[in-house]
Length: 206
Image (tube, rainbow, N blue to C red):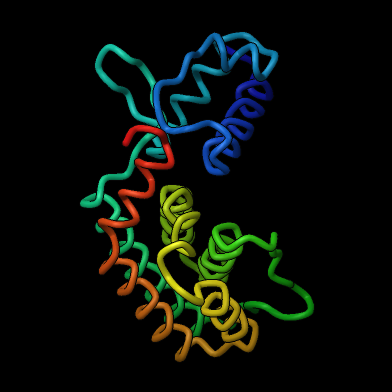
């Protein structure tokens, strides 16, 4: 079995590169990835198996592992599920006595729309006491990250909308935040075909 630290490093690097778009949608050559990461194919293969479980890559006939493309139908399901789970998480957080955000636990922002929206929803997930629910939201965050990179192209004022959501969370205004996030997801569902098309065009598969 591969050294745990080696496959963990491979997993973290490949996941980061897939989410950032450094590895485009399409087939993955395990040997080339091994050369890129300067490690043997065994930890790379184990890392890809984990990414497959997270649905960031898939197994395609005669191609092996490929970076997953989200179809419009699948994106619709992901947005719907994310909306429902984040709404539930906010309800639980508002009932919990655990701290949310504030000076003792600032929200770490990267300055990009997709990263900061992912950070916000991840922080919401972490604030409620159900660990399984938090893990589900984090998994959905990963699966929707690529789509979120294209949202600002379709939704005027997406950055300003996100700034408002972050402010509501920082002020622990869970009620208004639930309503605003529900509207946020509804607008994405209306344009899910356009988001899916941008994903395919961005991958060079159009």
